Length: 512
Image 1 (spheres, rainbow, N blue to C red):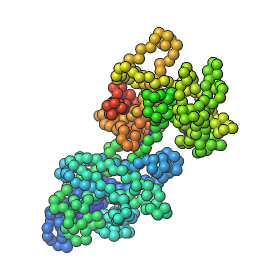
Image 2 (image 1 turned 180 degrees about the horizontal axis):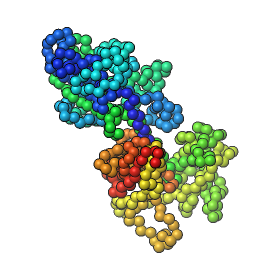
Image 3 (image 1 turned 45 degrees about the vertical axis):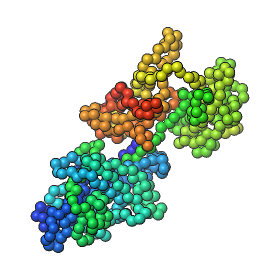
Image 4 (image 1 turned 90 degrees about the vertical axis):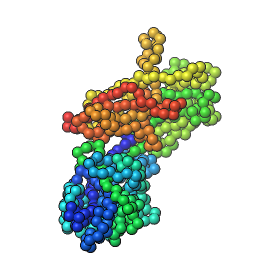
């Protein structure tokens, strides 16, 4: 599974907006248990008055924190990859409301520089959930024992600090920003000369914060906007909507492209890269992947042989590969998995079976086989239509289950001979670029969209048996029916084409 979500473990909104009397500011308000989060800037509702009302600006900022220790533990346990091989995205979902929604603005996402308390406030209208020394942060204080250095929160916004922005055109967009740098800094922590996890601040950039009073909050300036941006809301961690809660989403490409079942002889019809075939060795010991003790995470050698008279075992000397070598150096992929890339030119009478022997020189570890194919030019433009089936799909799954799905695929208009039908199983067609998505059947909500961008986190793997993928059911809300859809990449059209078939299943609480 190449995607994991980490839900926020604290969030709140802090404001310096006026309460309904338009005299008292709600700087002591806290909304730590509200089901929405809010950021805004209001200009010139009050232009004069007492010291408590001086200055026209009214601002709101979002504070949010995530369990980075869980991410660090998952990395230690190899659940997620090492730094550089995974991307972390902050995802916050737009909350529809009856108020005015601002347009054409930009939000800042910046790391918070000190600890703060979530609090238990709920009031986003009257600002009457006042902390005043009780547990919870507000515009003036980070906690009931510590004040902010500057009102509105303390953030890492100095030169060299990582600050992110996202522009909003209609104001109804979700927030989705790659915050990998900040997450990696949090994982490293202050002990590694980075910084500790105190969460993120989300607020309007200085150009849109209409601040004209004294004591400007950090990140704003005295020449802010002279118009209002009221109000942008997101769902909070307490929302009843499972898929709308704010998360950090880890994405990476863990697909395996094992070409043992799609192995081709080198050909002048193909470019050099396509004349290489990558095959894998999976070292299972009592059903568990284990590193080969003498190899560990190092290199391993692979040689190809022709078969014996009855093609039941390797025979003769090592075959010469396309680069005049007879040993290929393979490498470590992950625990118990090794791979090697090779090419070989067909003889005048091509061998129908090749045997790959994995060894360290003096010690042989494993022997496999491949059935190589020969490229040939076509005379027509072929646009295949496929028939799909998940061969091991169940009716329902537990919400704490990670399941592997095997996708059978063949040309829909495959026309076997009578001999083929009587003597062989139906061959599967390997799709080299395939992706999946998941939607909720009840309302067609796209619970997990296609990950076909730079991260390729929903791309299917393949091996000699065809395409497959792993899916973590905890990504889905229990008690509903869902469905898989698949898209294949068309290299000529340079586009993904969604296939017709739909595969439905249900997710239940793990107690079932």
